[in-house]
Image (cartoon, rainbow, N blue to C red):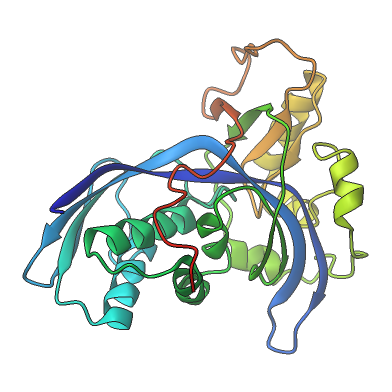
Length: 284
């Protein structure tokens, strides 16, 4: 195999996000449901036999040493393969949005290079490697929607009814570190149970990061208010600044003509499974 083109990396929305504690090493303990949506970045891979790794940004410029290259380098070091790759990426998922774009790119990179380099590593090995790259990366290797606990390493598959969502990303971004380091962050939410979530998946719980995010970024408040004015239940995903609302009992296409022209507004659907399911063996 010499190339893999049009490899998708889907975004996620957090249907809720509770912080239930903090470990001695400073990492926060969370509970959340991560839901895959059909808003994707697209990656392309071409084999290099000189062992080098390189990246071309086809749309939005990325940092020189982003998660994609870090993932590729980590996989190469783990396996000792002499092969390399030229990676090109078309970014669509906005940065600093709480939608997991960078983590999803890294996960799709691991899956694609596992196939391009004919490494045949099982998904369990890739997930162990993924956790070293970032707390959200293992989820994007799990194959579908998931109940996520701990620092992101405890992943339980969940099924969700098909649904549509209106997603709004203000131009301002938010740094995850700034939110998690805030003294006002609620860190003692009661533990939730999966059965409680399953009874009303799109109305369950809250996002404990949202109050801090709204203080740091008033645009989050404005975007949520715009959704609420349309009769929707707006809430933030992840550490923001993107917000969204479930389009229950709403027209199939929402009118967004009155949105702030600086906002990125997009209607999305959840995915049944990750589009790269089966790209790594489930055998350990």
